[in-house]
Image (cartoon, rainbow, N blue to C red):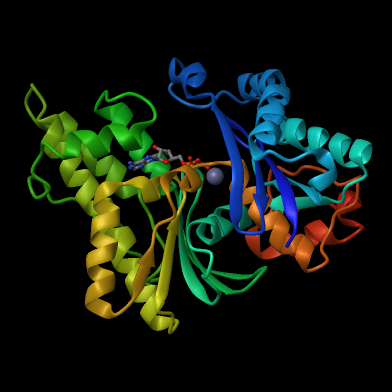
Length: 348
Ligand code: KG4
Ligand code: ZN
């Protein structure tokens, strides 16, 4: 079973972890949320600089807490795509250096494959096939995990990602950043049926999402209602609508694809109402629903290390010349292991 050190710097968490196959030995995450909060979102240039400042300390601590020496590490995994390019470069450069200095194989990882692999850390006996609902600040997708490394995206967002919708609505309601946890807390005090809002159904693509109409409907509501705004009721109505869209489409998609397991990953999988809705609907339909622990749901190094261990044990490694890419679809993640990957044209 390979022991892999994983590095994640694609957005605003500087994260390093060590895993032994599906067992996490250490998982250090330095969050930059406080730094970006004053700007109401992630500032790419600040993120790269902060990664540079933090990466060595996070790395040292992850190795120390694992209780292992470099001699006991079998490979170095790192997120190479997609993400903020300057941020990715910090992790990729660090991983290449470690691979070279310590003579270890380098394993480039697609960030979304990492999120999927978070589920193996929480449930080591999980095996494909299963459906993955991936809901984060940058993604809202339904992915059929047919086998290890074999993915089909069967539902995606046409506009905003689910986390983005939470963040934007939170900004409208003056609830601060990041918006998801703030709305989750505020919604507990409100009436989820106070205001009917549109779910954003797409007629020709039943498993796709569209949240821009929902966001605009909340904006119109705030313009129409007399002050003071009933913030808890608006937050609760918004949350009930978006979680209903996510949960009902996930269940429908699992049934259509004959899958009896759904794994929900990404930051929005931390949402209490989404968790409760998916569990209830899953029970009603004989589908088991898995939520990885919160620390594995948001960006972290353990999910990247776990994906690296899976790849390494199947003989996949990357060239030391591998390039970071801001964009790469999950279905193309196999490209990362081709030796001409670093000189191929980035897809558009
Ligand atoms: O996966 P993640 O940590 O980072 C990436 O985007 O890759 O996800 C962050 C997103 C943010 O938009 C945040 O508002 C949302 O996850 N989020 C939540 C909750 N906790 C975090 N959304 C809804 N409810 C929550 N409890
Ligand atoms: Zn992520």
